[in-house]
Image: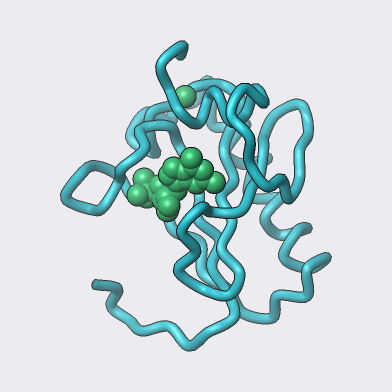
Length: 112
Ligand code: 5GP
Ligand code: ZN
């Protein structure tokens, strides 16, 4: 999507602090970290949010979770939280599917 911030970040058109990249997904540090470790994992193809995941594109999501599992081990994260906000009321501000990976501090439940 030509006017999508995260499509531009995934394409390298807007700079970001890369954590990991392959042909399917891109991981980068959040610009406003909410924990000592806070990075985002996004598909390179445009999907608006979890609400747009279908049988046809769910392989991308499965792949992203294998990447999160591997990266968290490589980074030595013993405990972490994976979050995806869907819709404005839930706190979504960028309408390209992304999974927040947060770690390194105590977290509360339920989330605010
Ligand atoms: P959401 O609010 O949609 O769940 O998450 C969007 C996240 O993207 C926020 O945590 C925000 O800090 C991050 N973000 C927004 N713009 C940029 C940017 O230009 N670069 C990076 N690295 N992160 C961004
Ligand atoms: Zn996009």
